[in-house]
Image (cartoon, rainbow, N blue to C red):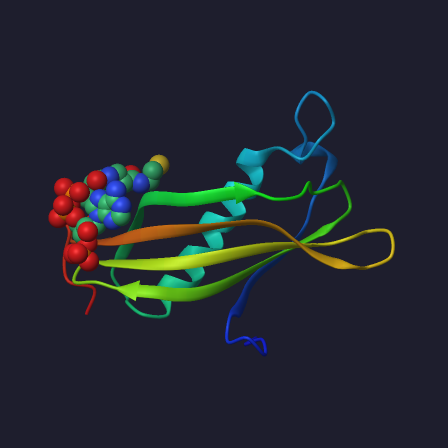
Length: 124
Ligand SMILES: CC(C)(COP(=O)(O)OP(=O)(O)OC[C@H]1O[C@@H](n2cnc3c(N)ncnc32)[C@H](O)[C@@H]1OP(=O)(O)O)[C@@H](O)C(=O)NCCC(=O)NCCS
């Protein structure tokens, strides 16, 4: 689904109790893994090659995610290089109480296309 600002909704998932840290807060690593998946979903539309994540840059956790919130990851293709694709991922939480959607986390994720020998290869 493409949103009015041109980003694509790549992932929508519920934050579950199993995704919390020892304090009961949603674990940042869980959020990063959802963002990584969202970037892969976006990059996968641009190449059929095998993709790995080489970098996550500029990640900022603006607001917390709570158990029961729906996490929505919006993606925008920022750069298509020779062997890499950089995706900007905006994670929003749709609050379990009230349904308000708030921006919680963002970052830039770069994925590299690999050949059968695991060397970078042109994405197209
Ligand atoms: C991905 C990997 C093969 C890249 O190797 P490399 O020697 O850095 O390759 P290159 O220098 O040729 O760079 C390949 C592309 O990645 C980009 N890149 C490399 N390091 C980067 C970084 N830190 N940030 C952003 N882009 C980067 C390069 O700009 C290049 O893109 P381009 O061809 O579009 O310009 C290697 O780093 C690797 O295998 N990393 C592990 C990946 C992985 O397992 N990820 C999952 C973690 S569990």
